[in-house]
Image (cartoon, rainbow, N blue to C red):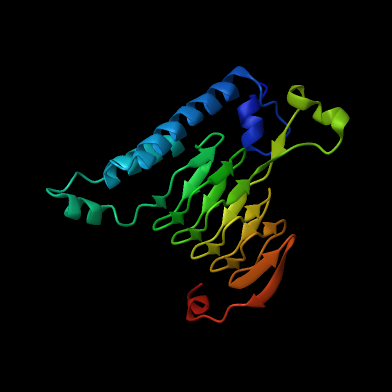
Length: 216
């Protein structure tokens, strides 16, 4: 059996080396893609359709968009369930980010997508939300700067969540459906569905009473 590639080890959450030709090229592709998205979005003269096309290029979503409608208003209506992403945004790879319908991501979102990051439908981010699925060995002798290995753990954010401004989510965290995370929080552990959490590190504040829970 062939030895796994560094990319395969990365995606499995194993120790891998990031400064190899394949992964360096993948990060360079992603940087070019998010620069195109950011530049076009911040320029202000871009259609909703074109912004979604650039977003899909960034996250390597190859699903076809519906054919354009005859006028701008009708075309925007066709795309109403697509994510709304405010530039600028930064990612490492892009292909490890999965965003559901009707998501809103405010400015300055950073996704260190070493491993898979999922964001459920209708979830909303304040500005400066950072999602870090990548991490490093604690032992500096093993870490060894850019010559040493890295690793990661998946991040999953459920549907109908709200993450306030300046929230940071660390590797391996799952935030359940319908949660609210207070501004400035650092989420180091899982948050169960329909709870408010806040602080550094984030702690459960209270349960959210909602009819939505009955549907989960």
